Image (cartoon, rainbow, N blue to C red; front, side):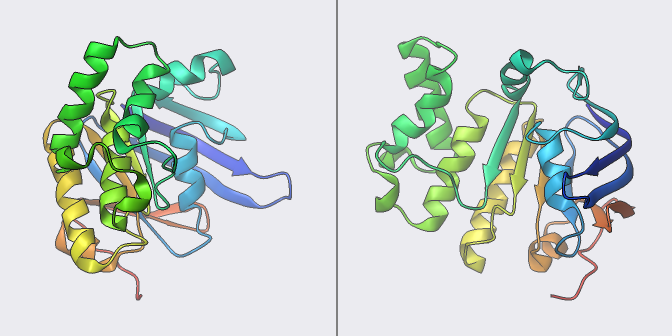
Length: 228
């Protein structure tokens, strides 16, 4: 499913973000990526959806070799990888329905199938009655659920969440986590980069800790392990 072998990432300014990472993540796992600021978590996550390219090493995801993948193949690779961001990245002038449908329109799905699938994912995230709202009419938690709905619209094998609860209050964060657990229960692999000690310690999953560009801890049903 996901395999990294001896992965290094050095940026043009000379900063080495990853320093020889080796990891394997199986289909259907739920994994937290934790570590102090500047440890390499964001780079680790960006490599997963090919926002960044490794300097050396090997990354295999869904049978794609991300070192060798051609630019024209990247959109096809990303159809099986949903991404949820901390700042939602919703299009402000579009309705919630349109924000989610857009991901299917770009792959020329039929209008009938788009409507059916959009309403399905809106029901999954509990926002079926907000389809005609715009993002600024929703709370932060609701906007994040729209972001999740958009990420799962293509039935991806992997959902990557980069600090998805970072801007949310504790109660809303718990609701978002339950949504991710539901997605994971359907067989989707979930990777979540997070600084939330309370979430990691409450919702026990596999924990991969990164420090100075290296994996220093990999525990099933682990804890956050850092002071906040």
